[in-house]
Image (tube, rainbow, N blue to C red):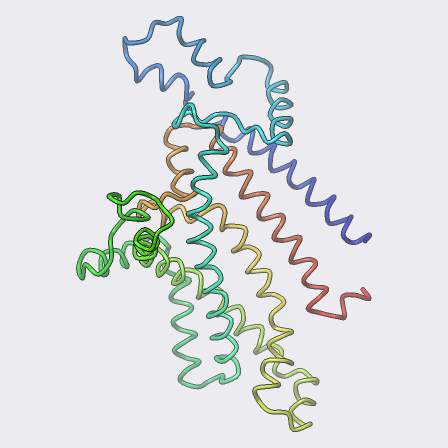
Length: 325
């Protein structure tokens, strides 16, 4: 309990620090969203309407410290304000709609990548020096070295434009009405194949390399040698002796990946015009939509901290030696 309380206090302090940065960061960006809207209207709006626009969007002039305290109070009450780009929708509605698409895409891609990457890393380390190990290691390093934008464009060009096997954008067929039907669900799955392949290609290499390196470091340990001397099967030693202990650092990588799920993949979602949180964040940055930017960054921060707290607890469950530490 003392351990959990210490970690909770630490993560709460980290959240407040992140919220503070989240408050000041957009305000250091050049340009005022209300001024941009007023200027884009040209002569259609009289000068006295500028103050009315500021009041409508909550940009009331006042000391920065007073705005900061108001902002902190709104966070813990769940009031993230109203979006500027999608006015009059509240930020929670804008992000909530995109959240469903991001969790479905990023969540599935992360789970598939973690499972497949961990398995490939285990087998490659166990068969170290074999042709399988060489192919998997080179492929994993290559996948982690290529930027996500390059991978997205290559996959889109080959399978979307050249071969024409899959649609090149959107989360579903725009001509279909969103409904819980086989036709619409099938369209969503069909449109999500290319983004899913892109994300899995980007993520799987890191899990594979991490698991392989961890396994190799443990294969020379005394308890591995003892397990083999007992006559246990290679499969049992590989999975229950080596892989279980090598999994600990990989869980940390999974926590980081989970933390980025609710942030969405900005590059992939923009390339495929996918209506997820990453694309919403990109559009909000272009429009200087402070409330949406702040709300999105808060979601990413909170998710990352929660994921790391879960990892702290799972470490104790995975490694019995930590219980007595």
